Picture (cartoon, helix red, strand yellow):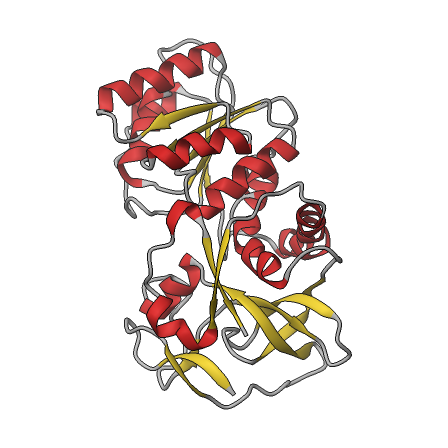
Length: 323
């Protein structure tokens, strides 16, 4: 079969022939792949930099974590891959598979799951979002951030504040449901004052953070208390596009009713992952099929994988490989 194959970690995948995967037990099923999104998770695994990449085959492996395809009887499904999924065939787990509704394209369905997991799981299980709460999304101009805005609104967020560096995309986020924007191109003092003014007017309940690093330090500093009572703040780190590390003062932790947690592979419980596949993803696929979720994608054929792997995708689009 044709596939996107990594032979040496850190190199781009090659468009190459690779042995088709074989179903090993009754909990697995083979699908004919139709569409797979290229995510930061996939790129991290390919480079060997993601914490889940240690077990990848050093003699060559197919990249791709999940995808949309057809079962033997023609049923369309999204599935989490046991084998790499940017290939003509892939093996997926039966209990991590979702039937797709009519009205959603293969490419749209393939683009969504990583972003849904990167936002809905944090909102529901780490932040415990409640209707009427205020959410700040740090680094919202990317694809997952754009999905997070819409999902937070769907879950009942009353006010959504977004940060980012792309001025044009920030303005577009207002159309997706954001209420206020904060440009990270401003100087630190201006950013701090803007966050503090918003927080004073409408206390921030939840921070979804896709950047970490200095932008996260600024937000935490802006929310530092002065000894008076504070509202319960849930800060959830989901990505580290700015840096893997931050400096965090003890004074911030002691002055704010702060819950600091992370959301990602390894942090979720078995029950939470079960709910992702049985309830959350089916609901989000249906919303997209009903045009209630905007999904911004760019499609490329599998044969162009080498050319497109590191391509810049504008305006927070998700790159989707089609077969």
